[in-house]
Amino acid sequence: MKRTLYLLLLALLPLSGTALDHPPASQPVGVDPRAGIAAHIPGAHPENLRPTAVPGIWELTRGAEVTYVTADGKYMFGGDLYKVASSGAMPNLSEARRREVRAHTLESLDESDMIVFGPKDARYTVTVFTDVDCQWCRRLHSQIPDYNRLGVRLRYAAWPRSGPASDSWIRAQVVWCAPDRGDAFSRAQPGQMLKGSVCNANPVQRQWKLGKDIGVRGTPSLVMPDGEIVNGYMQPKDLLKHLQRATAAR
Image (cartoon, rainbow, N blue to C red; front, side, top):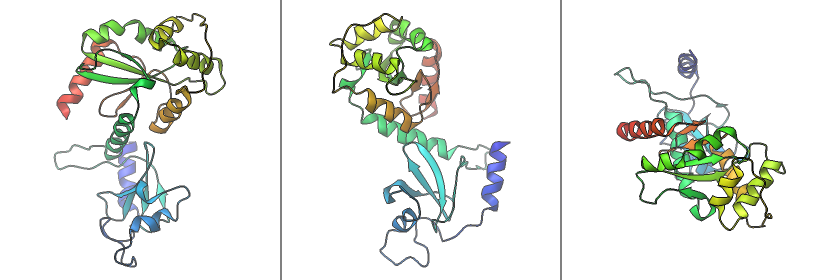
C-alpha cells in the first residue's frame, strides 16, 4: 500500500525544469545546476545532489539518508523511489542508493580501530555495530567460532545504544582502550566488570556517529558487504545463506 501510494504521488507531482542531466532552461550554460538547488536547502552541498531517472527530480543524500528535491530547489519529499519494470519487478532505487553509500562509507573505516574476528581472506566480511551491554550482541559473540568456520569474518564497531556519557558508553571506551580489545570485549560481554581506563584517542565517538549517519538504530546491526543493514541477531547458518543469496543476486 505504501509503495502504491508513493508511486501515485510521484506520478501526480508537478515537475519543474528539464531532464536532470541538463540544466533548467533558466540555468546559464556552464553553471552547475546542483549549486542553485543546494542554495535553497540549509546544510546541503552540491556534491550531495545527483540526478534521478525521473525528469525534474534530484536525489539528495546526507549520510545514508536519501530524500528528493525538485529541480528548482523549492520542494522536497521523502519516501522510497521504485522503478516499475516491464517484467513487473519494482526495484527500490532509494534502498540501492543507501546501500551504495553505506558500503562506500565503511570502506573508509580503519580496521585498526575495530575488533576483528576471523582471517583477512575470509569469503565474507560483515561489519557489526555492537553494544557491550546488549543481550543479542552477547548471543552473537558467543558464536564467533561458528561464523568463522562458515567463512564469515566479523568486525565490530562500537555503538553504545544509550549514547554518550552512559555506563555502556564508558564500558565501550574501556574495551576499546584495552591493550587486547578482543579479550576485553569477550570479558565485557557476559557483564564482567573491567579494570582499565578511558584513553583520549579512542574511536567510540567516531564509530557511534558513523553508525547514526548510515542508519544504525539498534544493536546488533549487521552491515553486509553490499551496504544492506540487517537489524538484530542472525544465526550463523542463516547469515551465511543471506550472504550467499545477496552474492548470487548481484
